Image 1 (cartoon, rainbow, N blue to C red):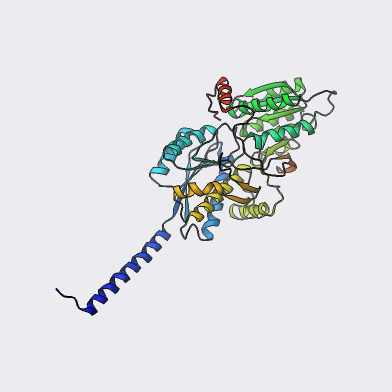
Image 2: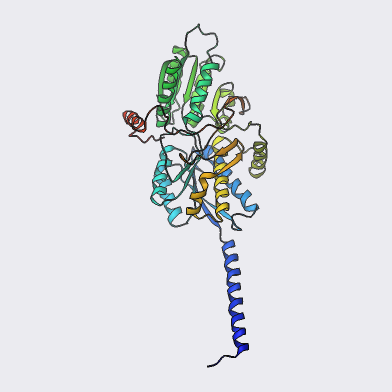
Amino acid sequence: MKISYKSGVALVLLIVLLGVGFVIWHHNARAQTSIRVGVLHSLSGPMAVSERPLVNAIQLAIDEANASGGINGRKIEARVIDCGSDPDDCAQDAERLITEDYVEALFGCWTSECRKAVGQVVEKHRHLLFYALRYEGMEQSPNIIYGGAVPNQLVMPAVHWALENLSRAGGPSRGGKRVYLAGSDYAFSRVLNVLMKDLLAAHGAEVVGERYEPLKSTAMDDLVADIARRQPDVVLNTISGIDNAAFFNALREQGLTADKVPVLSFSITEVLTAEDTARMAGHFAARNYFQTVPTIENQAFLKRFSKRFGSEAMVDSPAEVSYVNMKMWIDAAREAGSGELSRVQRIILRQSLPAPEGVVSLDPVTRHAWKVARVGRARPDGQFDIVWESGRPLEPSPFPSYRSREEWDSLLKSLGLAGEPKT
């Protein structure tokens, strides 16, 4: 059968028009399809008060990105799972989010135990987890972005500051500082105390007491009585976050106020002081971010957070890091043109941005963020006056260089941590 010239031209035009129509339809359909991310945090139970601000911060970053065009015209959708920071539950939820919901990245976990459980899932699937908490270090995974600080970026410089600036009022004259180590019976405390004792010994300080309380302990009277007997110049406190209310209440009941025995804490934030301002006022906390950081970026961030979640909504260091983690993923995805995992993985390690805490950059070797260290003094209103900061971001060193990886593994095994500290 012969086709006339006019019929042939018409057929070609029809094919072209159909092709253009398909391209337009495909573009619009793709634009209407959201890019999914998974969020794993506690929204119920005792940890919800600490973890809900992290979910809020993640959602704020997503809302802002969607309002400015999303990723290549596609909206970002957060699949939020209340896994209670239970390691097994979070790992199972992570598996479902990756294999059934096809999320492009995971954000979440609170404890190191949860991070390690989910880490095994993302490593199996060659996926990506963003973690926001400061932790004890001794870890490095090709499938995890560590937005929180490791000890050399927070704990060690803060201890150095404490040795130079804190002393027990009215105490006898001494040649070196007397330090008490108060912690919870979990790896964060035990690993940090190993590191702190190394530093204290180098400075000629004396550890006059070291004690670990069970997690979720509400009985701190014996610990505080021991502190009173030993009369330290300063207490270095690694007690788990939600257990600090009982600790500071016992200090106050026994008359150990901040002017008598100052406490420097490593798990206290604005969220935790909100209910215990009278007890904690005057004592000190080490964090990389406080709401009182006087940057333009921070003031604007706090206004947007308050507008979105209400004037009573709390922001603290883990929440700020969660916001920054999501912003970094969004920037990488926009540069990649999509949330496609393989593309984002190649781009994410060169991300840097002016965050509320200051400039944050990812270290391409360790996959940890460079961080500014700060010490704040708790005020009666639950906020912190910043009394010291490092002035520049500190390079992450998950495995402190004064021991080899093999020596660290051996030491951790001797502590019963099998080279894999869990909190």
